[in-house]
Length: 630
Ligand SMILES: Nc1ncnc2c1ncn2[C@@H]1O[C@H](COP(=O)(O)OP(=O)(O)OP(=O)(O)O)[C@@H](O)[C@H]1O
Image 1: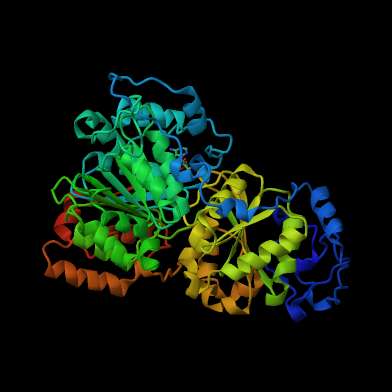
Image 2 (image 1 turned 45 degrees about the vertical axis):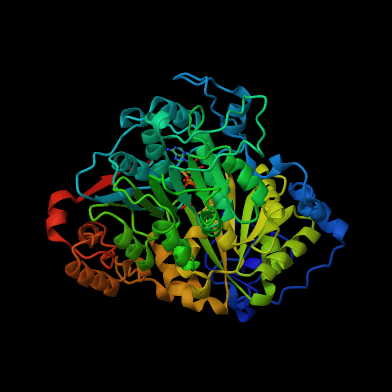
């Protein structure tokens, strides 16, 4: 049936296999804005749809209001972009716990800060559908790791454990069950786990816990803010971080900084964030107050590394690369090499490297081989690049020139809820934002050409619900964790030029996080054929309905051939050759797991993993363990 004609059907009521304005595939409907009546098989009797009435701006606004959408908000861009003003607006200057020298072993609580960090009305709470995620965890490394079943049993520092509880984390997610004990052993780690599975806490909890135990010894001196003569301009210290966390986008940097602020509460560890667009004055002031944990985008970090009076890397004990796949995709490899190797970096054996990602392409594997100790842990949750079943995926066929109307109808047909719309280009984001805004819908938008204040305000408006419809390019949205995103719409599908199926998985992963359910609707046009097979594979794997127009691509039998970079067998062979040649080459990644998965799931036989087998290593420590729902 034809989706676009069914303007009053909620997405939840939609059936799959639809098309919108697709010429002769158009469906019969009774009215232009009436309820859906069409069904499969009716396409042959389709009658031309009467043109829609053109409404005035006021009428469109009234319709949106009647539907329950909030008022639109006009943004004052001049205000955002003015220089000076109150620095506390910047996410990068967010309040954190400030340790004072007079504190003994137990630092006092600060109720206002506590409310700000943990009491957020918009903070993510775990959803009810953990049981839908039957996730297999594979871990390989030098020694067997016993997964933790609860945070209480993990041997965490008491202040950290207290903060974990304040965050509302009742039990560890699968990646956390394995990554936390592995990281507590002080070994390098590569971990691959699905979107929204709690990777940030998986590395931050063990790292901070280890450091908290030795904070008094390790932390760099900080200025005494309590001293009445303290002046941030003249009492600056040089930042000497113990942890560097590198992330590909500014928004992700802010988000991880927020998690660090929570987990460092009541500790000596002081987190700071540095990203492009944040005025250097603020960055310098914050670093100058002392920095133990530095979260940064690669460009800004490299810039700071060239300013030894501001920052030294000589005491870094942990370098963590988050969303490693994206950083290599976005051509940050030169910066990453510099960060991993360069500067005045601590080259001692106690410098630990970690990489976390939802996929693990060749570039990341090479980097792991180059910088990590040969016995690093490799943890994988499910198939690399896998989506999960809490996301209901729908694909709708739409004529390219009907997309705007289609997205408007889709939004008006749904119950008002936080909705994230992806376009492939910045002009497309701007145009769609204008179009929907002029139809009375509370939209805002974000992309790389926007000023940093605009970006921060757009995201804040989306989080708080002031503007519950956010239109974005995907690069800026990588890793976003916003509570209550009910619907992700791929206005443009990410064809291979725009990141392909891996990007699709990341995008739809903005909904249905941490045990919630969500809907992902994608507009499919004649330009998306290169993505079709991968899309069908994901739909089948996640038990979502394959639309009629793609049904010829359904894999025959139970086996799905996931032909992605991460699981490329040729590369696995290449890696194998490298492993044979060089003693430092790491051991197998997933070779054992793939055999097992092929056997028990019948699904991932092509999943040869990345690294070549090294029999000795596997015999010693490889463990493949199934973890139930979480
Ligand atoms: N053990 C836990 N219990 C409940 N909620 C948790 C737990 N661990 C993390 N969370 C929450 O789950 C959400 C998703 O976590 P996070 O952003 O780290 O996921 P991710 O795996 O990095 O996702 P992506 O790959 O999309 O970036 C966050 O809001 C986080 O606060």
